[in-house]
Length: 560
Image (tube, rainbow, N blue to C red; front, side):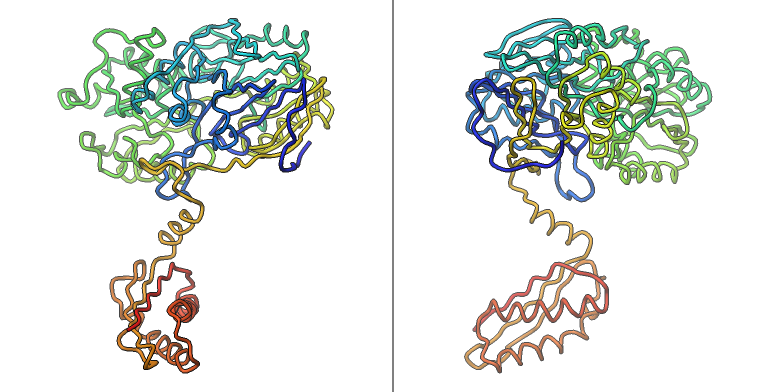
C-alpha cells in the first residue's frame, strides 16, 4: 500500500493510530508515535547526520510539530537501543517537556543520561527494563524482547492495546554466535506470532542484501592479521557506540602487546560508561592517556578513534588533514575503518581515505578486508522472522525508499497480502482497527535543522542560499542613483567571491549594467527594487554566458 492523503480524520473509537515521525526514507531520525484513547506512546527519538547538501547544519531532528500540542498526553518514550539515530534527539524533545518517562535498557539509558547532562536538563524520569520484562504506560502494555545488534542491550518492543498488538523490532540481526552471548529472542517472536501480531514494524536496512548477515566473530581473524602485519602506529576508527568492535580491538591489542588510547570525546564517554556497567572488559594496564602517547614507540600503541563516517570535525578527519593537535600520521602507519558506510556519507569517507593515503598510510576498510559486519538483518533473516511471526499487517521502517520497498516485497513473498503491506514515508497516519491497518492521512513531518545553538531557524531556503554561495559564488553590485535627475551618480561597484581575486574580470559587464540602468531611468523607472532587478538580470545573464554559473547576486541601489 503506497500513497497518502492529507488531514487525517479524528481517531475512531477503539482504533490505534501509528505515525512514523522519522526513519522512513532516511538512515536516521528514527521515531514513531502511537496513539490510543487520547494517549501517546513514543518509540525512539533519533537524529540524522547532515550530508554535503546541508552546509552549516550539525544535526537533523524529527519534526515534533505533530505532537507539540499534546506533550502532556505522552505516557512514555521507549528507546530500543543507544545509537545516535535512535536517541540523539531525546534532549531536544525533553526541552519541551523534561519529565517524559524514558524507558530502555541499562546501557541505553546510561548513554542517554550523558546527553541529558550535556544539555543541562533537570527533572528527567527513567525506567530500566530488561529482556522479557513487561511494563504498562497508560493504555499501552509493553513487552521487551532481546535483539542482537551492533550495540549491547538492544530491544524490540511489543505494544498491546485493546485495538491490537504491534511488534517493533528496532534495529536487529540474528547473529547466532554473538560476542556477548545474547541472541535475538526468536522464541519470543514466535510466541507473539501465535498470539497474533496485528502490525509488524520491521528494520529494513539490509532488505536488499541476500542471505544472512555475517557473524561478528568472523572479524576477529582479519583484525588479528592487521595487528600482526602492522609495524608502526595503528589507528582503528569505528562508531563511538560500537562496544563489541572496541572489545575486539582491545583483545587484539592485548594479544599483540599494544597499549590502547581512546581519541574523540564521544568515544571516551561511551566506552567509560560501557566499562563501568560491565559491557566492556578492559584488561589492567591496557589503556593510556592521549597526552602520554609519545612515551611509547609507534608499534606499541593502537588508537581507537571516532570519524569512521568522515565527519569533518572528527579525530580521524583532522588526522587526515594534518590538523590533529597531538597525532601526526606518517608513511607506513595503518588506519582501519571498522564500520559500514552509511548512505549519503560516501564522499566524506572517500575524502578521508584519500587524505590518509596521500600521507602514506595503509588504509584497511570493509571494501578490502573483513573488518566490519553489519548490525542489521539481511533478506534471509527477514524472511525467517516473517515466517515465524506471520503478521496480519506490515510496515517496513528504518531505511531509504529502496530498502522499504525491498522489505515489503519480502513480506509479500512470505504470504502477507500486498494490500496489507504499508510502504510509506515519514508523517503517514495509519489506523489499526479490527486487525486491519489502513492509511488515513498525513501530517507535515519535514526536517528540523540544528545549527550551533539554533534549532529550527535554518530553513530550506537558507540552505539553498548556502549551497549557492558554496558552489556558485557571490556577487554584490552597489550603485548610487539620483532618481530625480534620472542619472547614475557612482558605480556600479562590483565585489565578488568565487571568481578570483581580480575584480577586473567584471570590466566587460559594467558598461552593460550602466546601459541597462540608463534605459530603465529613461523609461521612468524610479523604484529602487525595480532598478535592482534590472541589475540582477543583466549581470546574471552575463555570468551565465561567460562562466556557466548561477551565483547569488545582491544588487544594492542607493537613491539620492
